[in-house]
Image 1: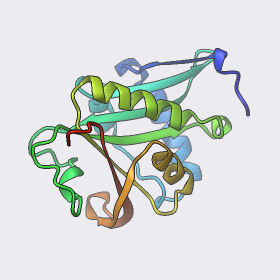
Image 2: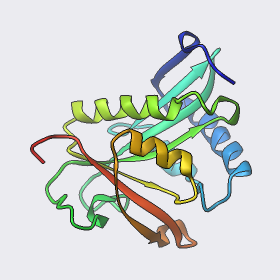
Image 3: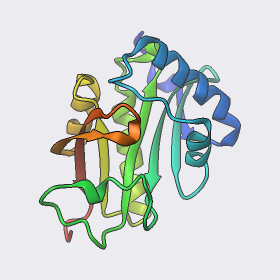
Image 4: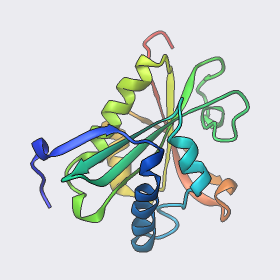
Length: 180
């Protein structure tokens, strides 16, 4: 369904949006293969709704129809993707992950993933982030297209055991400052 952008509201999600976010994730998981999208736990999504992390949502007629998350990395964080990069020295750089974006099926094709990605990158720059990393299933060609359009560079394909089943993920990165 093509949307009139004037009828959309993009804003930060809060903990009060958690149930809607979980519902959107459940809908997506029911229609996508586990090799394309892995389930994020209630605890992880709850954490992503608290500072310093940033979760953006898109509302249409007061309904949350999409969300996207920028996850800020702390020292020793198990979510740190920057240390997995080959031939990119990210040591000492302030890092964040473009962690997740889910758009309800009927709203896909409206560039919502791209629009939220642009906003999240701007917010990352404001917060002093120097490198952003993302993982995308090699089978998710639409997300690959969007992260590449956002300027992310493919680094390598990983078998990530943290996903439980050793899922393959393409690792992407983007340097946000020219002095990096």
